[in-house]
Length: 147
Image (cartoon, rainbow, N blue to C red; front, side, top):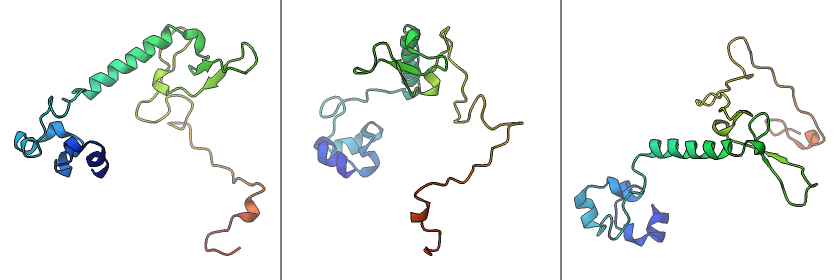
């Protein structure tokens, strides 16, 4: 709350519990802190965050559909970076939920954080990672502090 109190002095008198969400404070708490939503401090701009997020995702996907030539076959953004060879495109990371195939369909993904295709899952066990070795190995101390 210190940051908010410093840079938004109109909220400085609010209890910490409400400093980041002044619209959730009861009327008497707002009054005591001299905060009048819509007068001394703006009303909440987004009241339904889930709906706003869905609308934003739809807008981004619509924009990407209108520019399919700037997506590669895996749905990643392609951008022309000034100074690169003429016509060469650089592939950028693209959030999974925005990746489109060449026809404009959203590529499948698991919104819970897992992989929809190709990753570990039923019938696909995790591969054991190989131990990395390299020139820095002699500088890294093993656990316990011994060299």
